[in-house]
Image (cartoon, rainbow, N blue to C red):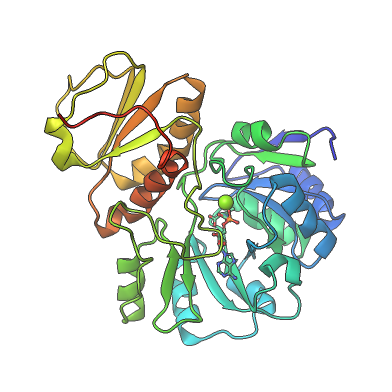
Length: 347
Ligand code: TXA
Ligand code: MG
C-alpha cells in the first residue's frame, strides 16, 4: 500500500495537543504512527487490533515469527496486557519505568497472537518520552511498536531515518528530533529463573542484578561481543549497515597494515588510541558508552551515505557498561562476516 506519509513536528517536552490528537486518531482508526521514544523511534498501532498490528509487519517487511513490544503510559495500564505480575516486575517497574527496559511476562487475552508471534509471553514497557506517553494516553489503548525501520536494518534515531525507510508505507510520523538513548531497550525475560537478558541495552545486567538482589543471566555474549540468538528477533545480521564493517580487537591494533587504496572509516569505541593511525577518510572516537549509543545508528547510516568502502571498528572493552554497544557493533559486522571483503591484514 503506497500513500502519502504525513510528518508533524512536535516539541519533545511539550507536544502540541492537536498533533497528539491527530496521531491518536490515526491509531484508533487502525493506522500506523511512528513516534519518538527515549531509545529509538517506534512504529505504533493499537495492540488490541490484529488487523492494525498486521500492517506493522507489512510495512517493515518483518517476519511474523518476531514478536512486538507493547507500550503503556504507566505500569498500571500494562497490567491488562499481562496475566501475571510477579514481585520482580513490580520492583523493576518502580525502579526503571518510565525507561529503556522491556519485561517479558505471561500475556493476557487482550493481546492477540499476531503481537506475540503466537507465544504465551508478551514484552511490555513504559517509554520515557512525553510524546510517546501522551500519545498512548490519548489513543487509550496499549500500543504495539517495533523500531520504525525496515526489518533487519538500522533502527531510527531521527524522524528523517523513519521517512527514508518507511515513507509511503505508514500514515504519520511525529518528529521530535534526535532520541536521547539511541539504542533499543534492554529486554529482560522474567519467565525464566533466574531472569535472563535477551537483548542488552542502556540498563545493564549489573544494574538489574543489584536491584533484584539476584544475579540475572546476561545474554550469552559471544567472544566477539554479540548476544547469541537470545530473543526471537535477535538474528545475527541485524542493525546492519550496507558498508562492510570489520571488527578489530585493540590487542592486534599495532600489527595491522592499513589498506592504502581504500576509502575507509575508523571507529574507536572505549579506548584511547593515538591520532595518525592509518589514513581513514572518517575517524570517530567515543570514550563514553552513553555518547556512543546515542550516536551509533546515525553514524552507521552516514557511513552508508558517505560511500566508504569499508569501516574498521575497534571494539570497546567487554564490561557491563559497554555490553550493549559492543553487541550492536558486532551485529553491524555480521552481514559481511563470511563474504570476501577488504581487510586490514596482520603481516
Ligand atoms: O527500545 C525499544 O525496545 C524499541 C522502542 C520503539 O520501544 N522497540 C524495539 O522493538 O526495539 P523491536 O520490535 O525492534 O525489538 C523488540 C525485541 C525483538 O528482539 C523481539 O524479538 C523481542 O524484543 N521480543 C518481543 N516480544 C518478545 C517475547 N514475548 N519474547 C521474547 N522476545 C520478545
Ligand atoms: Mg527493531
